[in-house]
Each structure stands twice: as structure tokens, then as C-alpha cells.
Amino acid sequence: MDLDTIYDAVLDGDAKGATAAVEAALAAGESPSAILNDACIPAMAEVGALFEEGEKFVPEMLISARAMAAAMTILRPLLVAAGVKNVGKVVLGTVHGDLHDIGKNLVGMMLEGAGFEVIDLGTDVPPQKFVDAVKQHQPDIVGMSALLTTTTKSMPATLNALAEAGVRDQVKVIIGGAPITDDFAKKIGADGFAADAGSAAREARALMGLA
Ligand code: B1M
Image 1 (cartoon, rainbow, N blue to C red):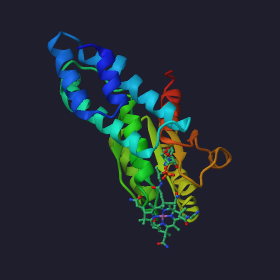
Image 2: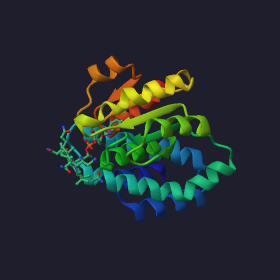
Image 3: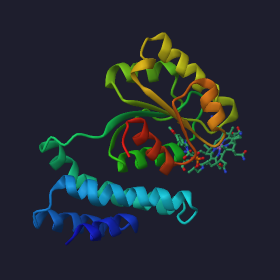
């Protein structure tokens, strides 16, 4: 079983196929990190690109993310045992006052698919909870999602709280959600903006200095 089979299974959202292909590749002596970096991550990057181009839609992206998750269930303990590190850590949440999490969850899945460890704080996350999570988990990136015009103001509030706590310089901040624009991100001093989950993963890798 080769890496192309795993790539195709993740791209097609075939969780059972991905599981079988990963098990077969491992049995054939393929390394867990090659399976992750040369099959699973490129497949999820392609899913993101096709989503941006309007060639794939939310349900297809979700089933691809599930296939990736099925592969990761097998790979994660092997990668940990082999000491393979994530490309970075992201603390992610939907901002205070906002309960929308479908897009945020997709962003989290795409970030995991791009090699990040994701600490998901959930929805309605107050600024102080982001601050506490940064202190506790020492992430590279903080990701904030907002779907309501009224809750976008929680984003500058969170940036202020991070600054007041003295941890703003330790992290890059990336924001997104339907009412968010690149202009808004620049205006409030965020480091990055992404319009969709695929570009969020790409932007996060770029913020880490990765291709
Ligand atoms: Co809400 N809601 N809702 N809602 N809801 C919207 C957002 C709304 C546009 C509907 C409308 O009026 N046309 C409107 C907001 C208007 C505005 O402020 N501009 C609205 C409203 C008003 C409300 C309530 C106030 C309604 C009420 O109670 N009167 C209420 C608020 C509750 C609260 O949050 N406090 C409310 C409640 C709800 C439900 C609970 C019923 C449900 C949420 C369920 C859930 O999330 N678990 C819901 C839903 C489903 C929607 C719509 C229909 C769909 C949102 C969605 O999931 N889209 C939405 C209308 C719409 O968008 N058509 C609407 C699919 C998702 C994949 O896309 O979330 O945009 P999206 O995420 C994308 C990108 O934005 C981006 O990537 C994602 C994937 O590509 N992205 C990021 C998102 N986060 C990112 C973070 C990043 C980067 C990219 O970096 C970290």
C-alpha cells in the first residue's frame, strides 16, 4: 500500500480506507512521519485549496477531516513515541458572546491537518481565558473566530488583554469569521487574517515561517 493510496483516501474523505491504507503502509515499513508529511498533510492542503476554489464544500471538507483524524488516531502515538514534533501549537476559540463554532471547528481540523497541535477553548471565550491559555500552554499562535458583527469587538478586547498580561509578543494572532476582513485585522493589530479554513492553515504555517 503506497502513500498515494493514503493521500487519495484522505482527499476523498474515506476514513475506513485511510485507516486500512495507513495500517498497510506501516506494516510495509513506511515511517509514521512520511505518512503524515508526504500523504496526510498534502491531502488536507489540497482539500483546503479545492474548498477555496469552490470545488469542494463544507460537508466534503468535514469528511476529509474525519479521514485525516482516523489516520491520526493510528499515527499520533507512533509520532509521539518517535519524538516527532508538531509544527506549532495553536490556542483557538470563538470569542466572548459568540456561540458559533462550525467554522471554528473546521479551522481547527485544517490546522491539525497542517501539522499543528490545537487547543480548542470552545465558544464564548472571554479575553482572560485566552490569556490564561497562553500562559498555560505557551502556544505559537492564538486563533480567534467571530460570526456576529457585535462580537467582533471581543477581538481587540482580547488583544488588549494579551498585551496587558505581557504575553502579546509571545504569540502571533490570527483572526477570521464571516464579518472579519483583512482591513479589520490590520486595524486591530492582528498578525494574520484568513477568509476560510484552508487559508487559515496556510496563514498559520506562513506565520511559523513554513511553506
Ligand atoms: Co447565527 N447568525 N445566530 N446561529 N448563524 C449568522 C452568523 C447570521 C449571519 C445569520 C443571518 O442573520 N443571516 C447572523 C449574524 C449577523 C451579523 O451579526 N452580521 C446570525 C445571528 C444574528 C445569530 C443570533 C443572534 C440569532 C438570534 O438568536 N437572534 C444567534 C447568536 C447566538 C450567539 O452566538 N450568541 C445565532 C445563533 C445561531 C445558532 C446557534 C442557531 C447556529 C450556530 C450553531 C453552531 O455554530 N454550533 C447559527 C448558525 C448555524 C448561523 C449561520 C446560518 C451559519 C454559520 C455557519 O456555521 N456557517 C449564519 C448565517 C450564514 O453564515 N449563512 C449565522 C458555515 C461555516 C463553515 O462558515 O462560520 O463563516 P463560517 O466559517 C468559515 C469562515 O468564516 C472562516 O473559515 C470557516 C470555514 O471556511 N473562519 C475563520 C471562521 N472562523 C475563523 C477563524 C480563523 C480563520 C478563518 O482564524 C482563527
